[in-house]
Length: 130
Image (cartoon, rainbow, N blue to C red; front, side, top):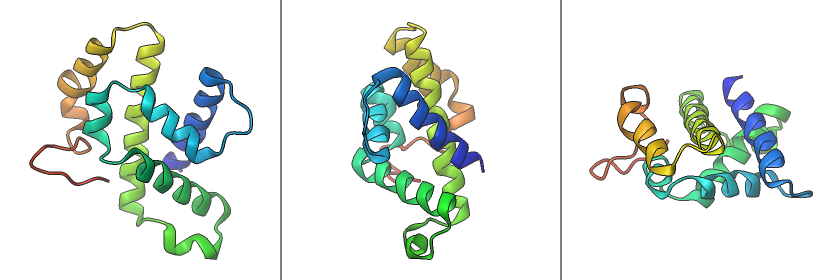
């Protein structure tokens, strides 16, 4: 449920910030990722296209429970991590929209908030993605 809430919040945020009509959900997620400072984006995801596709596939499966999408859905533990990653993305974008300078946002997310997000950040020695 938290994952779906984060996916819905991301879709709404994109509509409010970018105000484009007829944009597919996956493209909305990708465009939000591109708004992040590169150091945050690189710490959260290896491949923005793949991450956006993963969010879309899981959102579709858990929203519609379509058996056709079942093979594309991640295990629940992975979906939880995807939701937590989306929460960090949304937080960072909100901070940027509040006119907090990007270096400060990066410091908050990557350094000061690290104890909150340590399990989600991709380390150079640990290039795994949720």
